[in-house]
Image (cartoon, rainbow, N blue to C red):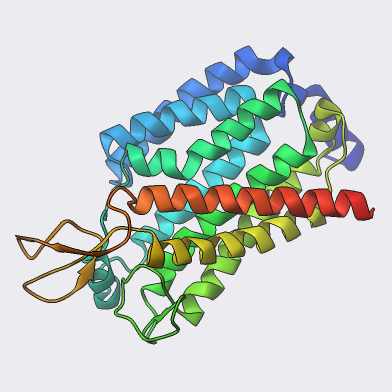
Length: 302
């Protein structure tokens, strides 16, 4: 297929990218595809049943009202985060870190909505009134959750003991708010992957024709990298200051769990209702706001 054929194909398949004319076929694809992905995720123990149902609904919504760009960006987050969570899952450092996490193993509905819910709102708003600023905010949101996931999964393998993002002091592996060079590098890569995915798809002729504006690939990659990495550090900061943390009376570990070593834990800091899912959502909102600001700044300066 040469360049002219490729552009013609994109023009003929604009229903995949957005616009009301393609919502019914996209809805069918979204429901069937979401159900298949959810079923496969449960089989691979990447999602719980509740998580799979939430992911299926979310995938169908993204596909129906957003099209290929929005769904593919969400799928890139899900696939890469799932693969990384399974990568070296039996490594002793990774297992040690997970002992202090509130949730581990298959993701449930709460985690699915925390990671993709804000993006779904932006997708819906973009369906009503397409805007490059909403797209930029979406890229920032997804870059943040991807960056945070990559940092958590890869950073747990670091040979260096984490440092608190607040005090700079050494903390135990798996402590909320702890950062490492390896984890921060992984966060940057995770953010870039989202920006690259959205940028390449938004740069296609079909998306531009369907939504009435040209999207800059370089801009979305840059926005994804900067806002996503910022979001990962904001997540760490909120984890160290706002998230409810407990101490185990048996082993002395600081943990996100209300029980540890078979015993109830003692609250040591944070807000009782602020769990890891809500921290992730707040950080993604902050990252989306940063991405929106960057997009506006580029527009004004240009």
